[in-house]
Amino acid sequence: MADSAVILVDYDNVSLIRDERTTGDVANNLADVVPASVVEAKRTFGDTKEIVFRLYGGWVDEKGVHSYKAQWLTTALAWYRGRMSGTIVKPSLVTALACRTMDTLLGTVRNSGAGYQQKMVDTMMVVDAIHYARDEAVPTLLFSDDEDLLPAALAVSAMAPGVPFHWLRRRKVGSALNDGLLKRAKITIGSVP
Image 1 (spheres, rainbow, N blue to C red):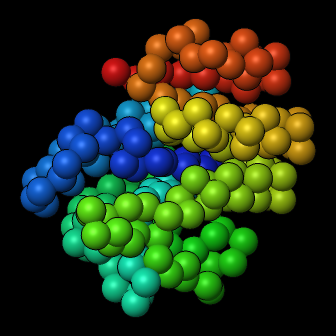
Image 2: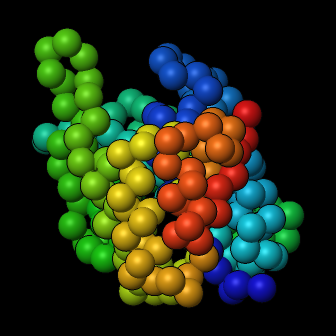
């Protein structure tokens, strides 16, 4: 049994309701994402005492203002703080790297004129995955369907070979081009509908 684990969630990538327009949409997405990933972490890593749950996305604009979605999520995440099936869950929106918590990154969401776009989110997840696995030796679960994160998973496996790393996604296990490579690297894979 691990004392703690971390879950890194690529929120916009795994949310069932992609175009959130209300606080209810956000609540529904969290009601899907949080329990599914916590259950998977407990199944994969054993009965951990504590899970740090980090939600990645475009939360802060160039001026340092939190997006409406970030404001809705901050309120809704409070419902998931506490015990879930015997494990303490500590959810948060990620606005800074785990290794530099004092430095809020500006511009993780930007208005391009054609709408709002995320910036730096994948890279933040990569850096945090490496930090938690290599520097803190914490079992890490990555929840994303984004194949751009494959190099991060492989790097974590090479840098921290004794630390469990699990990739959770919506696609079925065996359906991605590099699933065989992930298995050879001793990265476990899970799937939720």
